[in-house]
Structures are given as structure tokens and as C-alpha cells.
Image (cartoon, rainbow, N blue to C red; front, side, top):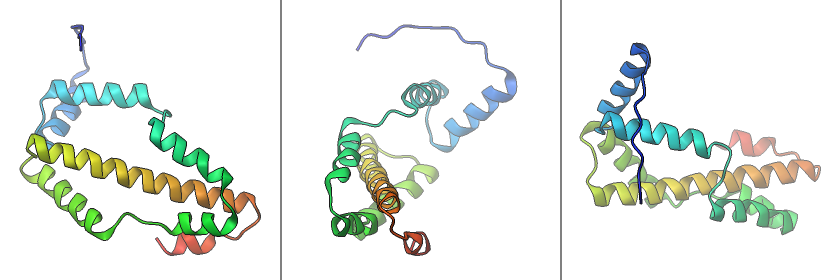
Length: 136
């Protein structure tokens, strides 16, 4: 991947915030700035697999939507993600742990997206989805 260098003048308070975030995640300031820029560029755009999952829900009947709205990430994956989150904050992750963390975080985000979109579709179809809000 080719890169392009830029020089950016940041107000001191903003720089300090970014530096603090970088220290908490044991990243460089440059890496933290790149992540922030990438997040801003990607805002509102879903990865292809997530967009496809959300769009496919439109085709499901109500029973299948209820199952999707109640689905969760497998408990062992939730525990692994939580452990990696704590490790990232306390001591940082190895490159292989970072890959596992990213994969699990993507799976979690996908599950949340599917649950939310399924609940939205059920509400649009006239169902009371209040129980879904209480169960989380």
C-alpha cells in the first residue's frame, strides 16, 4: 500500500486527547490519528458483509426476524472479547491477539447490527418490540 505524508498542526488540547488515547491503547500517536481519520472516512459506511446481512433480513418472515432480534454472540466469544478488551487496556495486545480482537469485535458489531435491524423491521411490521429493549 502506498502512503502519503502530510503535516498537520493540531491544537494542543486535541493533541493531548489523542496522545492520551494512544497511551491507553499502547499505540503511537500516529496510529491513533490514522484510526481516527479512518473512522471519520468510514462513518456511515458498513462493511460489505454487514450490509448484506442487514439487507437479507428484509426477506425473512416474522418468526425468523424474532430469532434474529434475540440472537447474541456466543458466550465463549463474548468472554474472549472481554478478556482481550481488558488486556488491550492494561498491557496491550500482541499482533496475533490484535487480529483475534478485530475479528471478534467485527462479529460482535455484526450481531448488534442484525439484532437492531431485525427489531426495526418487526416494529415496522406492527409488532411490539419493547421486550427486546428490556432483555438487554
